[in-house]
Length: 81
Image (tube, rainbow, N blue to C red; front, side, top):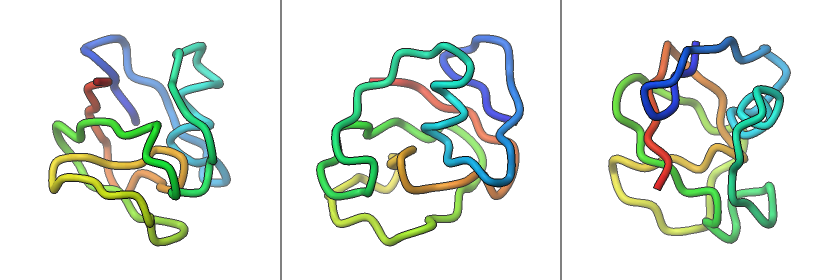
């Protein structure tokens, strides 16, 4: 399950990234490369864990994720910045 900005939570299909799940649920997400290079989709991870499908090259803080190249490892709570 993914919850963004205290909105209702939604499922993330196993074959989709967090970004793709957010888009499927009509959330407006800033992105550019979709591969972890640019960092445009940088999002705060409030709670939970993710696994990266590819190692991100963009700089992120310890409390941030790149939704374009990760999948939820557990239920996650996000805060869009």
